[in-house]
Length: 327
Image (cartoon, rainbow, N blue to C red; front, side, top):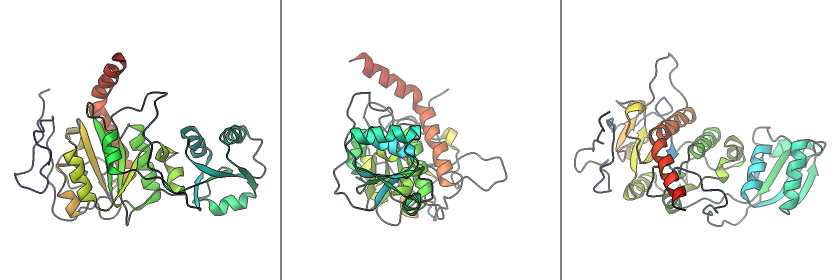
């Protein structure tokens, strides 16, 4: 199939890529609408590309910058607790519901907590119910410090220059469940990180630990004061910016997802804001045949993350094989 060229916006337009000399293959780009984009609908999805592959076993992943601990921040659920122990996430203490200590999964967690030197306290289940974001603590809650957000430069550094990379950018997604699900999908496809605004947006909380199944402990998440400026920085680093919107002319199968892509997903109610949309080099949406209005932002983001992976899987595998062969 003939290689497609990425079509740039007209010279001087707000969406013109800042990285010069970009000749990356591309598909047809949809127009960036100037009007406010409602994106709780079908073409949405965030995702930030990691260098395309997880760090090899035994290799220490880049550490997030240190943040002073703050009381009242919790991780709930057995899977999230296992992930916290496996990744060495700082845990202040563990609260275990009375009566669950002999269950196999809890016994395994208690062993891991003991090896990590984490104090354990048994409490009535009602106490965990009070701490739980939605009553799904499964008999264990870990008290941790404030979440150590990354810098945008950390995410750019995690996106190795010799292979495709994905960064998911969330333009004021506010629901914690959607946020956690998006982070989980981004991590699964090997994204380099997720970027969120530091105001009027969902952030990492006990609910996010749970809904992401612990993925927030594996993936750099950066809070930034201005999404539009963050996109400029990503462009300077060689990323092509794509916005997910139901108003796009082209579907994701034809989108220029090859290589380094920053995927922008809009808020549940209003979609991508006008200023952010103007920064997009292309727009895309999911194909739709049924009668239901659309998918929610988390579902759409998952579909688009895997579409990015489909476009880049062979290149990522090739880069990983070349790296392994050179060792």
